[in-house]
Amino acid sequence: MSSAEVMKPTNFIRQMIDADRARNKNQGRVATRFPPEPNGYLHIGHAKSICLNFGIARDYGGTCNLRFDDTNPSKEDVEFVEAIKRDVEWLGFSWGDRLYFASDYFEQLYAYALALIKQGKAYVCDL
Image 1 (cartoon, helix red, strand yellow):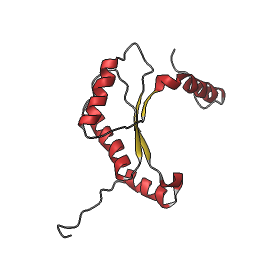
Image 2: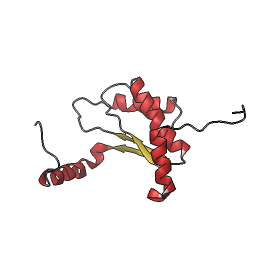
Image 3: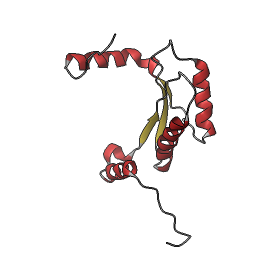
Image 4: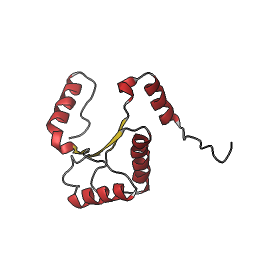
């Protein structure tokens, strides 16, 4: 390979995306998400997930949602929300207008959970 050639990164995730796009699944759109729980500061594993999800969206011309899994208010704080947003930006990524909070649609999530329980596809393990 010459120095002018650049190898496109590949892994099983990108291979799955390439296969889906070849079949025009979802009209070729790529949408990912990073869903942290704002109950502490991010660690290196979070950074890896951010780079993977935002990076794949960028590489494929797609979108990445920043969706906070804020359904445990006793352990979460707005300080962590703001810190996570700063960290995502520090890593070089932007969510644009795709900032979401699970608590904004908790009623719908609860209804889905009830439906799954009634269908025997989910159960409550602890109250």
